[in-house]
Length: 70
Image 1 (spheres, rainbow, N blue to C red):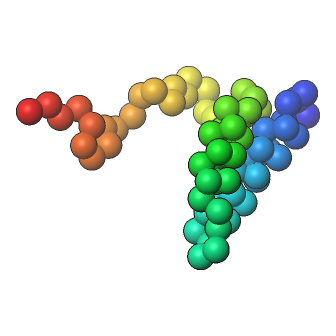
Image 2: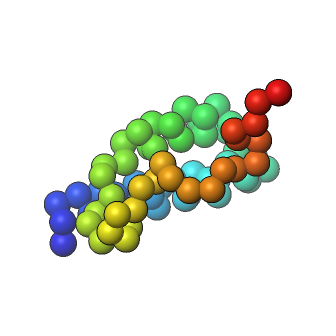
């Protein structure tokens, strides 16, 4: 297993748990707004084999509202 696989998986799990917490009725939105970007920024490189060869996350379909100019 790669050197950073455990860190990557742990951080993804924490981001998922934070997303579930953010949807709770009594969640602290300031906490979510502070911790979410910090967790996302701390993600190490994805482990080898997680994405198919040649995968580029910057290519893909346009999302609604993107690429449109008046």
